[in-house]
Amino acid sequence: MGKEQVSELIKAGVHFGHLTRKWNPNMSPYIYMERNGIHIINLYKTVAKLEEASNALKKIASSGRKILFVATKKQAKDIVSESSKKINMPYITERWPGGMLTNFVTIRKAVKKMSSIDRMKQDGTFNSLSKKEKLQIGRLREKLEKNLGSISNMTRLPGAIFIVDILREKIAVKEAQKLNIPIFAMVDTNSDPRGIDYVIPANDDASKSISKILEHVGSAIQEGLEERNSGKDKEETQEEAEAVVEETPVKETFAEETPVEETAVEEAVADETPTEEKETKKKSKKAKK
Image 1 (cartoon, rainbow, N blue to C red):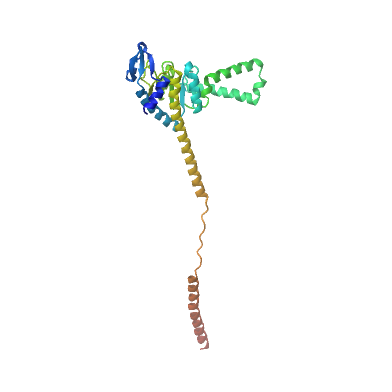
Image 2 (cartoon, rainbow, N blue to C red):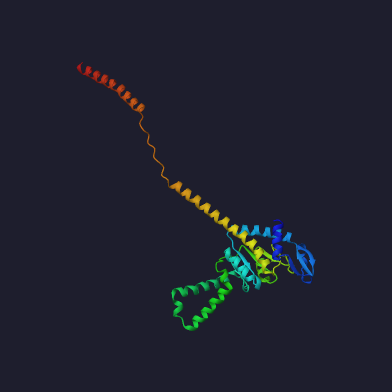
């Protein structure tokens, strides 16, 4: 990645950190300088780390695992939800449900309850309930949809988790660390990058900065998904070709009688006939004696 990409990140305001008095000393390797009481992030390191994270996410996506996006802050909610929907990945933009990863079985039960309410509405059993019960079930459905609707398709633990602002999402970070799930995160100058597997030093407060980073990450995941789909198509075509080869009947080959063989048979018959005549003559002479 060259100067063009760095200039794009500058335009998006990715280089702006927090006030110098709020900094975390562990972020010093990623800080370029201080200006007007604000730390400036070294964008060349941001570009390198973003490239590394994108390659890792591409591999995870191509393996078929899901990547969970987490961002509950106001300026990141809409951006994360839109980018996640484009690549068909689960996301959390409302309150992080405690035990989302460590107690995943219970969370799945809540999701199943939501789907069972939908089945009730389709079957017609929902209409047979009283007015009070309908209201209670409707409110429960809305609450579940708000908190867990975006992860309804996630049937198992994610292959990785992408977090915007690790200070705000510290519970999600701890749960992922406990289960050894790889953590990708946008880390600002006021955060501690230790414990994060793939650190992307960037401004996690500006909406332009968040959208710029997610644009790169989303394109890498999309490439991984396309590779997986193309690989599946190749396997299917190979299987079809093998099936066609197996089904094709083997033609039976019959040995045709050549004229040489016919002449050989005739000669053999001609040789046999005089011997038979001689034997009959000898028998007749003996009979006369």
